[in-house]
Length: 596
Image (tube, rainbow, N blue to C red):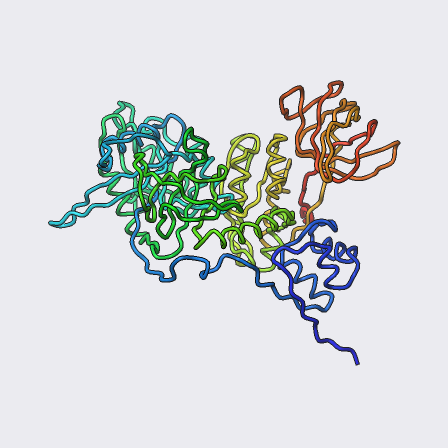
């Protein structure tokens, strides 16, 4: 009689394909075939996440359990109690260039600086705090606000794209004499994707041509309806130049923060987010950190970017040395072994022994490249079908305003079974870095209608596993989005040869990457593309372009007849006279047929 009982195995959170094959007692080829059928491309030397490995194991009649690894646990930390206390709001100011964002921050800073023993600002760390008095009946209460003046919407989106979300509120600055501009729209998109409340500061009210009602009308098109019109968005007319209504704006921030009921625990292991980092003479690698929870103290041992360090000293935003920092405080930390990445989380552990053990494990894990599934219209369609998403987020780029309006008008009335369509961002012209970051942060898809995608943006999209769906015909776009909502799409991959390159010299080679020099013999070559390698008319394999260099500069393309260097990723042993065929890979989603 056949035994259907599954064999139990334990797997780590990151599973090398070779290890999975050994555990399941099958050939690696069998594993790779199963992965391909699931839409995951991985070689024997690559790794997959635990969830994917568990599904594959199940198909071979094995039941997977996750190994208990040496992760950072409560016992590694200093304290155990978790008492929540009120904390100051963290506010980011965003808006179109020249609309007065910097002047507004300067106006707030100059009129509401927290008094310190040092008597003012001695250095700038990308964040600061203000104190405001709120009158409530016959009483007054003081409220502190933390402002980030480093991130514009690009930095804001980059931090969010990597899973970081430090901002509690956004002040959107819109000039009263100009109204909504392209960067205003982008800022709105990023704030909405982050699900962060927006307060509008209608600036430049001192100008004769100021028209706040026009600004309100413009913003209402983006579902930002002023409170006096029955909406929920506070809009405060201000003048950064004269200081008009700065107090009222800050009071509005405090009231909005009160509604959010912002709290953090102070008796848990301290954690914070890096918003800026640099090498500073006399201090070494330092970082501006916003405290998320717990209390940082001088001498604490902490983890960051798979490394560990010890706090040499801390400074507040005025440059004064401090012994401890609480939630929402902006601080400068010195003691890093190297500059941390923007958006990194740093977390205190109980001692150096624990920090070293966890750091070594994390470094080992990060040396194994994990294969993740791509995000695009077809993938989101599959998730809609499986009931994993309730909202389909799309970012639209169109050639002209007429096309954009036609697309939006056609999409307004469509919906799927239990899945809502949300246009996270829209714009005219080529796909941008901001679009990729927003798609990554909101788990959305980028749709490009009759617009190009620059090579560097294609590379960024590829690195972040964001697929760009291109269209030339509106009804095809509409049909595909409709089908995506219903979970019916399958991708069609289109590969186009854009150029050929002959290898003249091999400069550098490692196991899985290298640098070669050569000449473009047809078309053009660009970074971020796939390469088919031919030797004496025989295809020997595929690699990937990392960068293209002309002289000492990295460039976006090199055309026929010119020599250049190519940095590639792949484990093929390249030889002189090999021919590189540069392939542009695009996804076109087409399964529905137009009726009629």
